[in-house]
Length: 357
Image 1 (cartoon, one colour):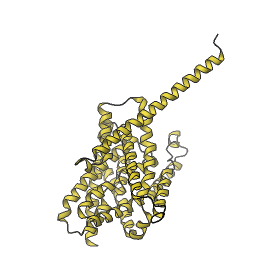
Image 2 (image 1 turned 180 degrees about the horizontal axis):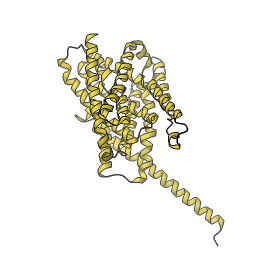
Image 3 (image 1 turned 180 degrees about the vertical axis):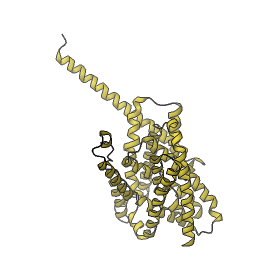
Image 4 (image 1 turned 90 degrees about the vertical axis):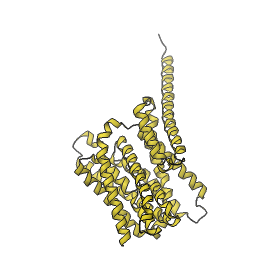
């Protein structure tokens, strides 16, 4: 007869092996996203690919890898960690890029324009999507990404909206695609437009999607244009926090209306976006320490910016590895068309406003 102590030892050994296996799977999944992200980051430094950016490259590569090769199921825990927790950490670090003091002192008027851009992008894309019978949750993510700051905004609101992972990944990829094409179009139109460098910079900052797209489009017009473009863009980033809390209030209201309906509805209550408090904290830290002994050096800020981009890129890999193109293809095309129409109209309207004001 086996002794109880022997059975207990075997159980402890089995649990230990299970924990080790889980840790190995977690590390393997994170390592896979890191490998993809590192390769994409290196590729984005090459001529031509730099216009696309590491996040878009990594996302596309991950989606294709999932479709044609796939990955072992046991790596999923690490991959999900990258797509969720690392995503939130990157959003927190992203706050260092926002100097609230400069924005409030010099860009108060830009905040109104930014608010108009966000409202128009979100509401109009939903209107067009409804007419086209496009997927509404995906279209909402595209509208928010178009109106605020691309991937970062989509990443911030996805947990609040309880968006599916494949919708989040698809919207990030589509915003990157349309934004890159738009930035290149802006550069081509620059010599043909009757705009000063400052006007052109504001136009790019108010209407383009990602910060990278804004910098890409504004750079040919000179440093003054780049500075104003980034200031205009940051006015939209600044509004990410209030927009997120408004969305959370709406989702909570919907949840409370259906309190007695079903257990499934009870699970749809949005989580409080704690990571946005970190985003605000780092924004305040960077703003309040500017010009003091606590101010971070340019080198440190550059390193943190690189880490932020790498973490976001790892998150994009995690999202891309969970995308099923066969299921998404029929839903994404109409949403992409709605976003394209909205983006073109947004560019035209903001251009006319800047020219005639």
